[in-house]
Structure formats: structure tokens, C-alpha cells
Image (cartoon, rainbow, N blue to C red):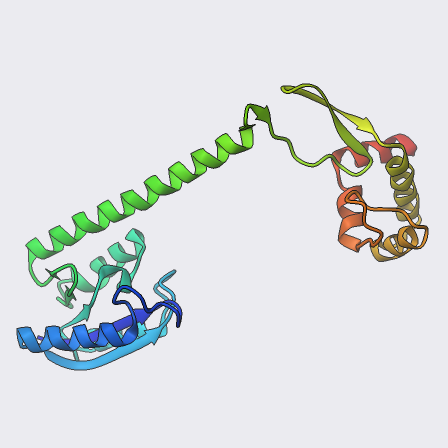
Length: 242
């Protein structure tokens, strides 16, 4: 078969475990020599596998679509794509398409999709790979949710909005209590904003007057002012001040 070889790394630092471009190129050339395939060209690139919109990959596929190559050879399936959806798209449009009838060869996986059995094995492998990624994602989300819910038996809550602090009745109950100095600053923010002052102007005024931020810093930023004024509690306070 006439094959186009495709070698890929995501970053220039991906050189361990036989994934460097040089290692891949050597394996691809050896594979073609061993099985008597004609190496049409070798495309060696640094590009991410996040999508199929890749210059190197599309160059290889164009050679197949134009009839200049009968298939593609890669060192591992993840050099082609890490997405089951993208892989299925390639199977449907290129490697299982009767009008193209292209072969997919993976050296490390010992796969050749020029046969029906090869395509079946490949689908099974990619399905398991996708299952493993989704299982890992689910376990990670579950762990994060548990961490957000408890921390050594104590509830975890977000930061109190500017103008208030959390007061805990016990480890399961809390309430917001006004902070006097922050409340005065917040009222000043609301008044200035109602007069048409910009967030930057308000930030400059607070800094000039020595008002400290929630974290005790003397410098204010427009986004800090905006966040303070956009909290639910600040909006309710503004309504009461009207």
C-alpha cells in the first residue's frame, strides 16, 4: 500500500516514552520497510490533538482523498486523535468510507483497518479508551464535589461578600453579619456609582482615603469595585438606600 506517515507531538517537550518526533519517524519508516508499503511522504509536526482542524493531519488526509495515498500510518492511536467522537468521524468519512477505502495503520497497536476485523478491533479499543477517560472524569468530579461539601467534617462555603462576614452557629449553620467599616465603604461605593462615577474613579477615591479591601490591601481595582457592588447583598442594600 501507498502510505502517508503522520508523526505528531503536542509540545516540543514531549520526548519521553518513545513519543518524540525522531522516535516516531524511525518507527514509521521501519514499519513501511518491514511490510513492504510505499512511503509516499512523512509528515512530522507539532500540533495539538484537541480537534481535527490541524494543518499536518489535513495534509495527510488530503493525500488520501486525492488518491495519492492508500492510507495513513501512525505510531499510536493517540497520535491521530484522543477523542472518540473525532475518531468515529474519521472512520465514517475516511477509513470506512467505501468511496475512499483508506487504511489506518497503527504500529504500536498492531492494527490495520484495511480489513473488517481490524476496524472492529479498533472500535473496541477506542470505546474502552473513551470509557476510561469518562470514568476518570466522573471520579474527579465526585472527588471535587465531596471536597466542596466537607473538609475534615466541616462545611465549606464561599467568601463572604464585601461588607459582610460569615458567622457560624455550628459547623453546619452560618449567617452573614455586617462589617461596620466595610459597610460604610460599600455605602460610599453605592452613592458614588449612583452619581455616575466610574469603577476606576471609585477605586481611586477609596485608595486615597485609605480604605482597605476585603483582603486588607490598600489598592483597589475597577473589577474589585464591580464585584462588590454586584453581590446579591450589595444590590439589596442599594435598594434599601433609594
